[in-house]
Length: 227
Image (cartoon, rainbow, N blue to C red; front, side, top):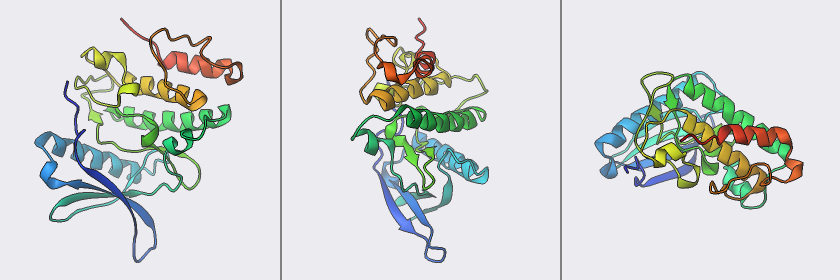
């Protein structure tokens, strides 16, 4: 299996624009570690960030500027002061209303990408950021894939293991549906604050009653396993 762009040395810094005072997050990548395939991934990541900013999409992180130094390639992006979902999940699970709200934000962000034939391929708590208004934004498009059409496929194995769909493990062609699978796992994580074990998964008995049937149905729809 080839895991794309998994071993690049990435650092993210908080910076402030001198004239406007606006805060931005700057992602730096060491040039010496960039391969030819990484160059294509970086070009796509930059293009997605640019379009998110141009279209003023509130559910994706957008690009503020891009530049380079002698040793690094840099992307200056929207700063989300609320941090990522991991920070909060390290403390406790989310109330149902909070999980529904964040899930809705992610759904709208994914729809924006999928309408442009882009699969994110790495939906997980660290890649969901909270902005100053409390909205959830999808970030980190380093593993994104542009397909040939709306139902286009990809084959390379990439992503984070707990959130990877079965067809990726089985080395099959897969579509944008892998993003919905990852969202289903993320919803489960937000509600119960524990990993979703696929072996013997029981969505009827694995959720507390207070979660509500609508959320159980939502997760069930995302975790459909095909053989």
